[in-house]
Image 1 (cartoon, helix red, strand yellow):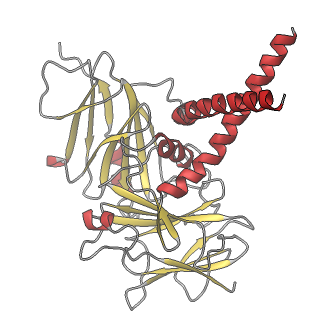
Image 2 (image 1 turned 180 degrees about the vertical axis):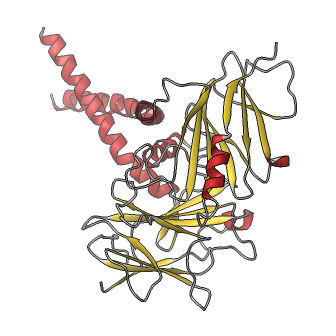
Length: 197
Length: 178
């Protein structure tokens, strides 16, 4: 009886150690394999069959069915340009130019806001994202998206942020071309700046 | 005494690390199990599992859904028989991505890859290659089971009704070549 109790405790300790290793290692591994581009991070060819088991495990936590090169690349921003976490109690302006590398324009792209759980943020306007076809550009060819609770009269594009919770912005770029994939850390991507609400 | 305690701790850590590798290797299985239970994928194989409308804040099928894409999913089991997947193709971005049972994206075909705006794919398993195929693309699945995921770009939403009609044209049926 004492022996069973002893080995049960050992088993539980082993499971606890394994759980701790897993809990700690997946985010660490994410930091190792991700490419950083200013505020954005990306895992190149996230759905690739040649990816490591850690990448597969991490992607499983993010949405299971990721695409691979050359079809699409996903970027995620959790911080503003001051490296401070995006927070629903604050307001931001996301601004950028046409997303492309050299002369190759991607097939399409989109910018989507997700709450801390990875789901779309509740919005009575049902505007959860903007894409390359429905975003409104300024007269100088750039675009701005206001990220806040209420619309901003000076900015045409508005995405509602969650109330007092962290959030993230995901940029999907479809068929961006080989050069884009070769310059994931250098391509010109939008920036997110904190502004007064 | 201290040496013995150290030795025991080291053995527990080594076993814990081995179990951790097992956890990581099969992490996707747990996530797929949750997805299958939520979507009913475990009960409907070799058919169109679901068509999604545009995703909204109530969408809970998958994490990080895109509200710019309409999705359709076929779950498949091609251990004994191939699957024939057919669909109309819109003028805008459309793709079908094949995922093995460990969620690896082993093939993607998009609207630029498909001739005549009509998709016909014979999805075959390693041991279920058909004797003959007519006018279609053969895709070999590295695993007996998996998922075929269709993505359609909504764009500015002007063509939504047409995209919905095209979405309904998707068919996934077992192929009998006898």
